Length: 178
Image (cartoon, rainbow, N blue to C red; front, side, top):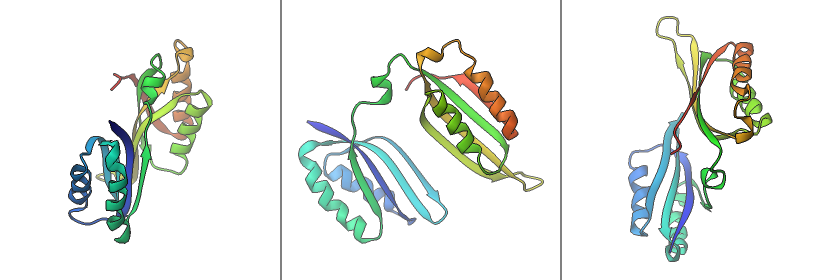
């Protein structure tokens, strides 16, 4: 029987780290079902959902010691049902934020969502420099799950008010559940 695990790795960026990690997983019969990977400054981060035969977990833990010895931080956490499976009536929305970068944007938006019981399913953000002026520009894309009790409520308009206060543009669109 397969077990689903959330696998994380952070550490120094180097050529070949993704191949090494996926080889360890493949050698134990693991299958990567979803992943996110990024170089953040000089560090590299991997986040994966992996299905692996349950009897292979102890061996995988031993295999990962080689990565830990190289200075990587590695975790494996057994995963249960997804949020979407546990909350099938919740509605998916995509949120996009754009504007001049400044402190507190993510904090304010995350706080607004938390206060309304809206779950963040994914969030990607970055700061890039404007082509002409070089000013830092903030962009964020996120997928959220909105409880059915907010259907027909003005939560989107109130989020737009948060954007106005933060001087960023926020766009909310209905999304397809993955």
